[in-house]
Each structure stands twice: as C-alpha cells, then as structure tokens.
Length: 77
Image (cartoon, rainbow, N blue to C red; front, side, top):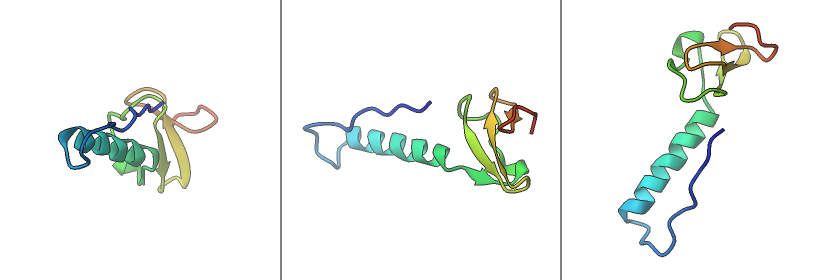
C-alpha cells in the first residue's frame, strides 16, 4: 500500500516542502504504473505488493517479497 501525505498548506508552491511532496507523488505514481520486460523488474521491489506489468510474460506480476514476484494465482513468476 502506498500512502501519501497531504500537500503542504500555507507554503509557497516553489518552496522545499512542496518540492519534497511532489517528488513523493511522482515516485508513488511511477510505482503504480511500472511496466517492462522480465529483466527490467525492479529488484529489490519498492514494497511488498508492488505490481509490475511484465511485457515478456504479457501479464501483471506482484512482489510477494522484495525479491520474489508471483502471478495472480500465486505461482512464481
């Protein structure tokens, strides 16, 4: 699960708090939309449960651990 902090309130949008929040937002978005070949899977995964669309397999896989991916039915991928 990815959690996001609320954006800074009462801070100038060009300040460091907004910059940190935006970097966190982009990282979370990129983690949710990851795709690539089997060789491009992140290892270690960013978090357990991380979904990656594997273009080699043509299927989504999920990180069961930070170093092991599985298909939706739980078999190793």
